[in-house]
Length: 378
Ligand SMILES: Cc1cc2nc3c(=O)[nH]c(=O)nc-3n(C[C@H](O)[C@H](O)[C@H](O)COP(=O)(O)OP(=O)(O)OC[C@H]3O[C@@H](n4cnc5c(N)ncnc54)[C@H](O)[C@@H]3O)c2cc1C
Image (tube, rainbow, N blue to C red):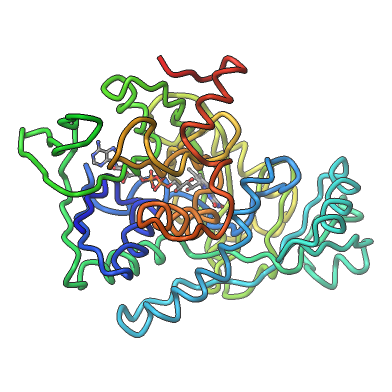
């Protein structure tokens, strides 16, 4: 079976990996260089930031992220030579309003990686000596990790490019589908070239609303800009991830510390600005004042593919027989990526699904959200 995947972010690349491992032929198309959009720009935290603020469907997919990435890292690394560094740092959360709800959530659901402890100042200092003394307590999720997402993408791209069943087409924008009898006959790129395949997957991240008009669907995926800063400290200087009021610090193994992030609805603008930089800086230095001694080595912005509830659209496009979606992962596309791709592969190849696919079904989501007025079939 030949499958064309449109979009080479984490959603498209992991879908390709899942399918190719099952013996499929895969062609991957991206309008720019592969792996350079939101999936590169993100932080790589392998959990929703405050899991209790998300629908259960999001946490279900996120729970598998860490163990699946460990498996893929072991498989890909001998071939690619790239370790994408699953860094077990744990995370401290300082939002006092979330302490009870976070601890109750952890105790109630007992989900993998969500064990939480309440720490007073002495214990907090043992875990991370750099925390501002104004924070006298925290909750500590000791099993949380982050993945070095730019390297993860490099590894996936390297592995897929050397695979005999995969073809990459970069700088090629797919603009529409030729559809007959509820079936895509071919896709058409911006130059008018026809792309034939048995099945087609849309994994176009923040650009996914592009398909709404032709497919006569209201696909409510919008770009939401997030800006980031990168510090360079000595290796292992900051021992844990830290979070307060949706701002975070993410230490990498070599001492880089990713700090973010902002949220702005400003279309497809990816130009970072000085005011947002200052806001991120203020929030991060409030948590870890000593960070100020280290240089900022990079600033960037990326476009999250937002969806109304953060639950991604995974499954067949309504009333189509060979067109599939894997879009709308919003703030959690890296942690949900492996499980999202596995679920889609299972649906496409008519294999038993590892979880109930209904909460992610495009048809179901569109019907439910149509009822609440935020999305409808048009
Ligand atoms: C600042 C920031 C921090 C984040 N932090 C985290 C985090 O800590 N943990 C986490 O889990 N998630 C995080 N995220 C969210 C995560 O990055 C996204 O949910 C995820 O990357 C979305 O992946 P994607 O493959 O769907 O989209 P993308 O990575 O955006 O990929 C979509 C691709 O489709 C291509 N494309 C679009 N239209 C077409 C077309 N017509 N033809 C051909 N190609 C096309 C684009 O060029 C792009 O390469 C963060 C995001 C941002 C911006």
